[in-house]
Length: 338
Ligand code: KG4
Image (cartoon, rainbow, N blue to C red; front, side, top):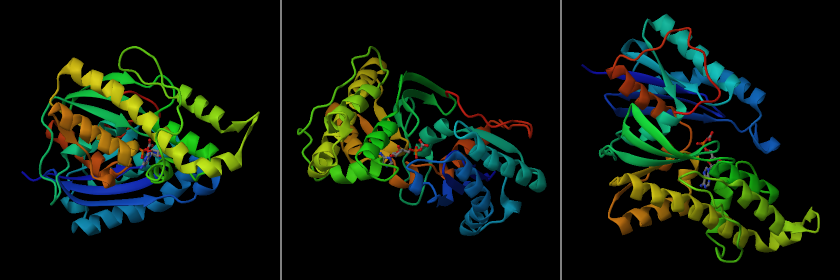
């Protein structure tokens, strides 16, 4: 039996809809919100309003690009959380209304599960998918986790951040350097022109597989200060070196715990996911580490690293096969671990 899933994602500031048929991607439409750029961060109320404006055209376009209409959709998968509650409410309510009108079941998806399961999306170019078990380094704006993935339904978080996420470290340090939001891609670009050994920032010393990035953030801020104020001339003169040193410290912190987890759980493949997995340095470092160890690295296409509905539809496709549907009464959730 052929299975067609419509996925809807609205957890933060990207409205996205995608169609997956039998595990193969048919469309993935993402409408990003520019309105937040002026504020240096996502403004939740503006995000909800933009989702309301974007959701209908985004879903229509995803069906059009897949060459289907609602009659061919077997179930609607939607991101139920975690994320911004107002944003999630828009996608959740829309998915419920559409499922009710079309007479198809609803599937609730955990956004973090979806990031991990994005590795199972097959496209024309990408037919291989990971074998279980593997370790996923899940690094986004809100999370930094090491997850042991034993099946699409059995994921164990063995390491997590105890304060800031890796993406926050990129974004907050970029903000004090006067770079636009989100700062991660700007640091990535500048880092390629700088000397990673120019500055030394502090690294956490915490046990186990957990992460911490707040000490790094503080030591970065101290480096930029002249007395009590941030010194704009110093930043200007050293932009590329600051970015390169920051990025390399974040990568060292990420890889240190990842390597320990690979040893402890003796997996033969490692995947990365989440917005920060778009970072060139992170991608190279993980690929190099895996090559050194003779294990397989799953580096996602950049289009699947940031928020997208393709991964939501994929997670929905797995749940559909186990008939794991959710009632219309299921509310969205802002925070939860997988
Ligand atoms: O997973 P994601 O799209 O969203 C949420 O966490 O909601 O991740 C967004 C994060 C931001 O912190 C952004 O700066 C970071 O991903 N990011 C990057 C790069 N592209 C996006 N960080 C470093 N280098 C990049 N190229």
